[in-house]
Length: 357
Image (tube, rainbow, N blue to C red; front, top):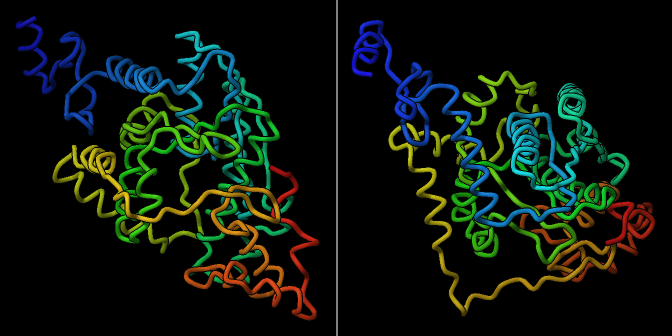
């Protein structure tokens, strides 16, 4: 081994620190270990398997929907879950679930990638659209409201659309491709916003047990760089890499850049932020929102009307800022004003979705 190591060093390379046989092909962003491709595939997949097992994310016989956007995270998640399901005999029925927000030149192209993934991985695909569920596309919403608050609409509508799609598929859980970077960003955003309610649950690997469909994050401890620049690249997976054309100035982007700066200085910073978020304790005196259901559509909500119904009412009335920020609109006792408004369409004739929860 010493002779082989000496020859490799003379050739300008280093041996894999795990197998000590093959030439190191990369340095892991998470651990800075120099390893070969084969060992990286093995440890990458094994780490995700251990997360699934240790947290009991799935049970044999469950139907699992994979949130599929065509991007790197969801594509790698679909590929890895398919492999692990066969290798370790999870006994899961896997499905791909996509949301068509109606963004021309972005989502229509990424959905073509998802359709190819459907054939490549042999997983059934279900697509739900904003147009069918809400009567609006994001192109139409952006045309009305502009680029400042459009991500609010998309985030709220997308979350509910995934739940409605999962209900149509009659699945037991929804698996999403949120990675360690995403979770660290969310922790920072909730701290900056002072959002105690979300801060207390954003680090949970499984959420929504009290809602229509529980969600889990198998990539909770997986770095974005290892997903995209390493695993997806070396495996030559088919994914869509263009960023959303409507989110160049999204608030989350500033948190993302801050996280990247920290990672360059100290790679473990991402996991440390997640660990800190997990250790936060909410004071017993803190008043938390009570979970209930929307009076209009039956979706989970801490207000009389869920956020999607409020935002949709604003769009239908030509007042798109009705439910944004501190302007709670309909949930501040102004429901009478909604019915009295002349020349506008009441939300009673257009619920926020076509399914009842």
